[in-house]
Picture 1: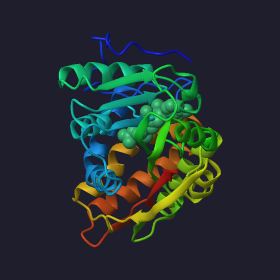
Picture 2: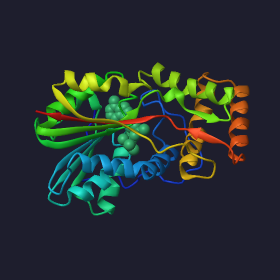
Picture 3: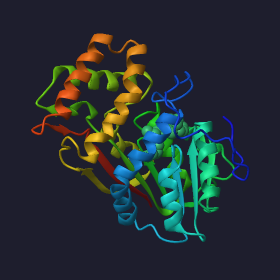
Picture 4: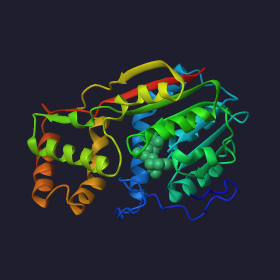
Length: 298
Ligand SMILES: C[S@@+](CC[C@H](N)C(=O)[O-])C[C@H]1O[C@@H](n2cnc3c(N)ncnc32)[C@H](O)[C@@H]1O
């Protein structure tokens, strides 16, 4: 595990418009952390920002608060959190990806948000970081991370130790990811979705993670204040939500094929089904169900 000096962001941050997606290394999480994925995360954050803000406000975030963003990626949510907590507050972002952390630190400087600092670390090992003292954070936000980690209980426990009494853990993540489908139904589409979920499981993740999180929060000594499903409704061709997974296919389908989760034929069948639905004004997509949880430290 290495840590990153937040005062010396790497000026050679990843170029945001690189055309191809390089292969993730075996150390990286399953989706990779290349510049194309970085750009996808920015788009994804914009699509889901309203749900994030609603959750933060439900939890009572305010200027002066100290917030943690665990598995922050390139920091898109962290920058918004930093604006909300303002110069009297602070945001600490943690991610295992060095390129993402370098990008986030450079961006924080560029956006004049010195209250946001980013460090490279494994989410399960944050207890060993000097700058994360026990009982020092009002809020911790964790979105689309616990579905990728092999020991989510260790992460929840480590976060719980960092929260002040009354501090809140806020999670947004998937439950029943594999129910994602298109109408008219397509076997080719559903085969690929099943392959996506299997690839996450094979890398230690869990596409059903929200089903385990209330129990893990209780085991970490937290009380559950809020649990709900975030439902943006069905996505129709041409809508922004329809385009959300489109960027994901471009990045992840070639990787699924390279790793042997789908064949070239299955990929082609999927793309044909997708292209047909894109052109069909009667089509719609059932998005992968997203849930949210607020758990409080006594
Ligand atoms: C899908 S991205 C989500 C990023 C961000 N939370 C967001 O909502 O935009 C998942 C992130 O989790 C990070 N990650 C996965 N496993 C991790 C771990 N064990 N420790 C720290 N970061 C991890 C990845 O590097 C990646 O940046």
